[in-house]
Length: 273
Image 1 (tube, helix red, strand yellow):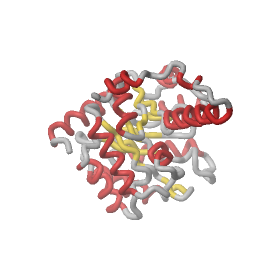
Image 2 (cartoon, rainbow, N blue to C red):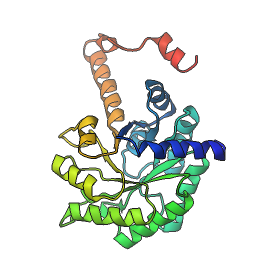
Image 3 (tube, rainbow, N blue to C red):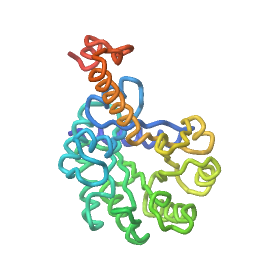
Image 4 (cartoon, helix red, strand yellow):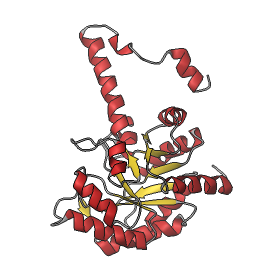
């Protein structure tokens, strides 16, 4: 576990990134991927609940028990020196108090930020309920020592007559409840992103690579986005590489998949072996 002063410094460093022109925060799913991403040069790392679930052989969205998720998050925090923000899904609890306990548990591991979703089982929480849950998360991770990234699934969950208006209203309430940043996944229309960045009273986080129309980070920054994450995209790319390599081995027995691969000795060096 990190010391309070170390966690406070990391939280301040993560929060300061939101004051700049924009930054990319990649999503790791285990200690090894986290270390590689840190060595590449990223100043902060996020976790991906999807990537962690897939690496355990189960689908994203709930089957993985929170205990296993926290074990993986703890290993990621312990593996790197940069700030880590955790994907805590909807807070792993039915009540605001349980959401607060989830955030406190993450903070005790050295996590200095987290996403909290406002939907579960394919439905948005009523806005007052979502605000209460976020306020509990804020209490457990005080402002200045924990970067709270409030996620709204207004564009994901069916049924909202006006997803844009829903997202903006919820974002405003979440910021009032103490959110440092607002995360709106599922939108990739440039005009909509620009409007969201203009109307949401906090730094805007969007995920790149989730939708068919992939917008690169520089374009998202130009639209007013502050924080760009990639969710499970890196994990999907890695799993795709494994599947392609497996198919090549099975079908032809060749090892073309090794072209460009990092040498064994170099991987050992990167992990201190």
